[in-house]
Image 1: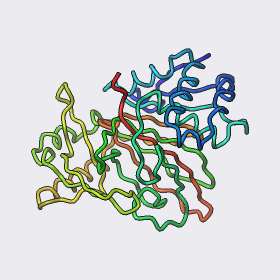
Image 2 (image 1 turned 90 degrees about the vertical axis):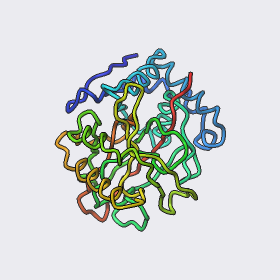
Image 3 (image 1 turned 180 degrees about the horizontal axis):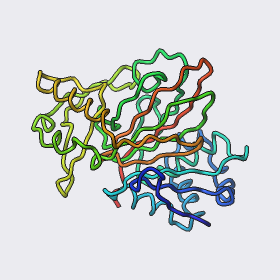
Image 4 (image 1 turned 120 degrees about the horizontal axis):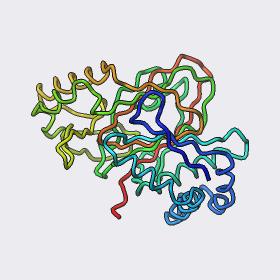
Amino acid sequence: MSLEIKEHNQSKRVKVIKLEEQDLDKTIFPFKKHSITSLEYKPFSRFSLAKSLDEVFENKLGRSLINVLNDRNTGTVIIEPEINNKKFDKDFLVKLSTGLAYLVGNPNFDSMTGKYYARFYVKHEDKSDSYLRKAYMNMDLHTDGSYVKEKTDWLLMSKIEEKNAQGGETAMLHLDDWEHCKELFDDPVGKDDFIWGSPKSKNIDYKVEHPVFTSDKEGRAQISYIDQFPEPKNMKQGIFLQKLSDSLEESNNKIITKLPVGSSIVANNYFWLHGRRPFKENKDLSRELLRIRGSFFIN
């Protein structure tokens, strides 16, 4: 077992864990016990799978993930499995993502797909009603779960497959590195209740109200925001959101990085924002992603 945590080459806040092939080989047998269908229909099987993953790494992987995600100075970890061998197929990556998520907490029900995870493509042509699949638009910095009632403490995104893709880099920003955080956090409008809706593809038939900014136990800024979903009640809310959006996108402290195929990024959803750069146009473009988001375990 060789679990090593390193710093990302662009930021000390982002940790990187590489999972070597010799260790992943040890997960193949216990993973085979669980089909994708059984994982979808039997929630307890996901815990069993996660435990078998953690045991390969001497029960250090889950603890390391939780420590990083709950540390305000870090809060994001990128998992890079060594998967050049064909034995590590798409189903294996779904199972690995599931195991990682269930070492961190309980995933939310994803209404978009009706499962504990969402799996979707970004392609050249798209007729969806949200930015999620718009390959040639910049996906502005945001957090997840702004339009649902469930707590969304963390987010996991895995790159399952990628073909003919140029561009599409991941963008990230830690609130404490954002130049305008104090200014916007101190603005009383950011503490007002905003209405948050969602497009039809999300399959959410309600709206929620909450502020953009809240405080953690130490009084530090936390954010719940995505540019497409707030419905301003008045001029001051509309102007505040425009200022917020502009200052986030203009930040010089964003981390722009390209994630390897098979990798997963797990981030604290309260003080990290994420987005995606546009792809270079290509009619054969295809990227498959998997998303899981949820709440931390209570104990």
